[in-house]
Length: 385
Image 1 (cartoon, helix red, strand yellow):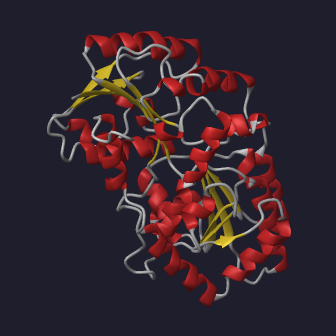
Image 2 (image 1 turned 180 degrees about the horizontal axis):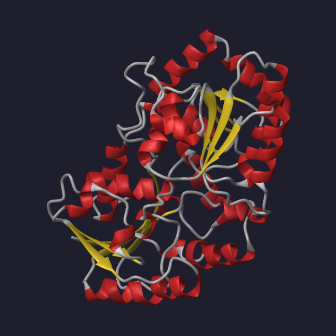
């Protein structure tokens, strides 16, 4: 079977969608008998992130560099890519990133991680909403199967895209790779990576795109209040991710204000760089905060728990599905509640209990199962997927 895949998200600036696709391909190439995967790239091969599956004999990389933005990418995705699928006689096309081309010469399969642009259009630009409407909402009914990552997300898809049948949606939860694991020795000294980032002591951590619904600005204000109220332990707050807020929030300005108020470099904005840096940040963090109003899954919550980091998140949307009873749930909008949670985490018994429960919870999620269900569905091995 010849499976075509849009490799757009496998750049060296990998996002959550890139993590999802790379994990699927890693497992698909372990036992690829009968499959040939065509990875179509709208950028040069030199910009690919490093993965062992890229050198696997079942993977063929088709490089047709254009641009990842604007009308040129739309032309590549909706005109050039379908022509390539026909030229390479692809049996099925899989899109990991919400979108399906307007015309396809073969059955199409797509993953819709969430429909936040429909549930909360105020969070997105008019251009992004238009693209999502054309390539996601309007195209989803033409997909052979729509994959999604949680029961909550499936319910939302059915609510906002009523032309879809429930039987055409397959839930395939996300998971974490073995690299997301606790330090073998909790007393291991912080690595040089942390020092290079400006981290010099215990720190709270946030990981993810800086979006309005994730209340990172509220988290910074709460952290500042916490340190003023409880100055005995000099915590830091590390925020790793790119600013994609809409309406725009000037996080650099907020961070400068917090650091001036605390008279030290207490809050750090850290751009996305290497996977090794990400793992290090998780493993050495004192606690993880992810207080969001809306998530299709919330992969950073699972990543933090898998690394043995006590996690604080919101009791809404998909997040209770992911965290179970293994996280501390708080109201996203309430600064005082966040301060209370930070103080509560300084209790060693609470900290140890959340760490143990998080590790146990994370073990329930399995990439191999998700990869097998996804590929078997694309191959038509599940009649009622």
